[in-house]
Image (cartoon, rainbow, N blue to C red; front, side, top):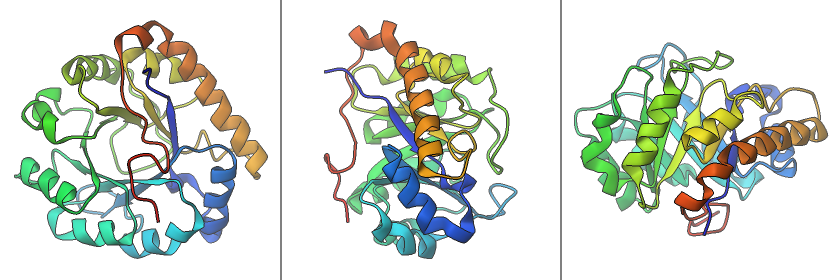
Length: 245
């Protein structure tokens, strides 16, 4: 079975005055997941939103909520985000001293567990927790702000992590500066799940968003062709293997 490309628009780039409408629009436009960037102003130099916002927008869509916690400490807040409606909870390898414990806690809450790496963090940081993971998220910008430019230096890291993953059923996600122009290179390096914020939320309508999502998907599919015969990662589209509210 070949792995599907997943496009996960980041709502950090949405119009927060119309957040519910914006989520409904990207749902209709073909988003596979909804990526929720949670920032605390401590681990990263910005504040976005918390579990109460996740809870408020959860009824808007049945798509998977891919919640990326850029917060430290993270363990005290895992249960709140799980109860708010997160389906995938990703924590940073750099955000706490006991990554294995954090990942166990996420899975104990009945959620998919992910780990994220900042650009300067070596992939060896996740070597001993691979079997706890459902997702690895490679940051291709320094976390904290949307709209940054993609760091080409991370393509090699993506490729190395793809090799580390091997046949494990782990999705490889990329977040930061992803556009239709670099999606092919990202997929060619081995990523199968692409987060895009500004590149999706260009325009004002669901039709605009649909065109943006489709362009990123087409580029990524073109880039991944040489790898199809080597990889097999289960789908995590809405409703498949994850309890959706």
